Length: 105
Image (cartoon, rainbow, N blue to C red; front, top):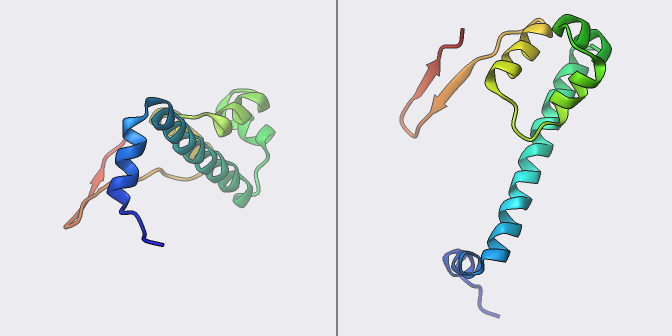
């Protein structure tokens, strides 16, 4: 059986709006799960409960849970979250030929 080139497969997906939307939704879900997992894992690695973190953030335990489950976390929220865990957030733009740190307030 001959293998189809990726470009041909992508063209079929792009040609069908319903299929394209389904693929995009699946990608968004994977990204959301990765972010959710990373934030919760980061908190657990620091041996901090949601309630303890909520106190440091001046919010509720459910507020922390909401942050950990958000599809798209604002950078300012992520910065406060990491600071409340006792860390610093670093953002870096990565290109083929260089890495450029981006300063945060």
